[in-house]
Length: 296
Image (cartoon, rainbow, N blue to C red; front, side, top):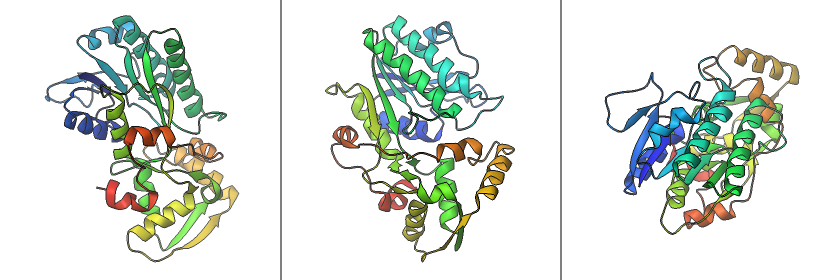
């Protein structure tokens, strides 16, 4: 098929593009105007400004399916979170309905139900709109909600790997208690390939966690062990310093640690992998094998 993939140069999008191409599809990669190169099949798009269906309809000509892999952790003037997570995806989904492009795969996130963060509320808004289009019979979408996605090139993954190298680890309190189910970026890409296969009819919300949950602190300890290091000494950062460090992170847009991240650590990021594993045809990669299989 001819597939429009938004966010094709991002951490998840890059891996998805490679997997779809290996599966024999033609990927039309959406890139921001600043990232555009002379490569064929690249389509410039601006998720900060392309907030109407009219902006998307010309890009859907000849397209059989759409995969939305655009996302941001934090709000910025260049990539406002309301536009990137809600207004632009809604415009894209409406354009798909108008153009008759019924197959849509949208990458959302686990842990957004009940969260009051802007990250969660904007993600939920796009999910709800896509579900409403499906209920009207306008689209056949799959909404993927992965837990923490691990792999080479991910900002959060790099942060975890750097923490895992420290002989003395000073963790914010929520990192020692919040549970996650890390999932390989390659498994997430494989599920998307399966969803776009001819025999798959899976639709709706699909949780995409790894096979086992653990606390984020234990996950970092596992990454340390996988790199051949001995156990680290783990200390809890006092709550006041945790808050201060998060506010300091707010001033550095390039880092993933900020007050929004701290708020999201207040709830577990876990789910049921049953449908995800059906798509894979196997269990997902266990967190204890992620360095060997996904950090490359």
